[in-house]
Length: 102
Image (cartoon, rainbow, N blue to C red; front, side, top):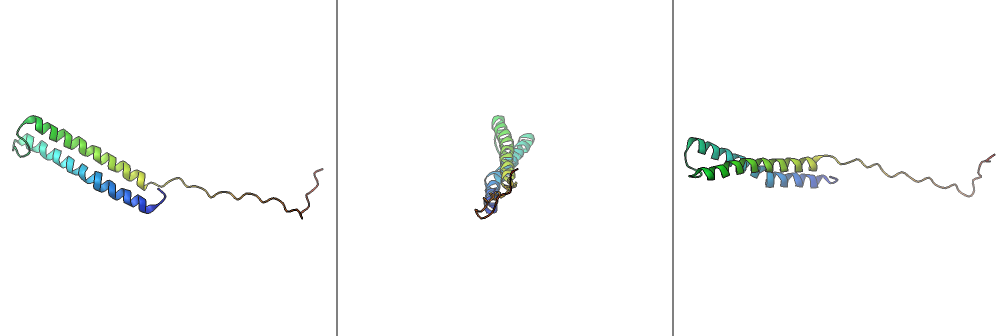
């Protein structure tokens, strides 16, 4: 990106809107997995709900993580370096004499 403050703003938004919810989703899915294995019954009482919590939390969390990493990479990478425009040659002044062409 051309403007550095825009890049920083996009990184902050990516972290707040995608990275933190992604980590929370993964934690929710893992906690549901542990709860399902040991049978505590804290998150749900039936296996179908556990499966939705586990797969939805883990897969959704990883999806959010991937989106945030892609946004951060795009925002932080440097753009193509554009060379300054070349100055056009000035035409000869009418006072100068041209060299012979023979």
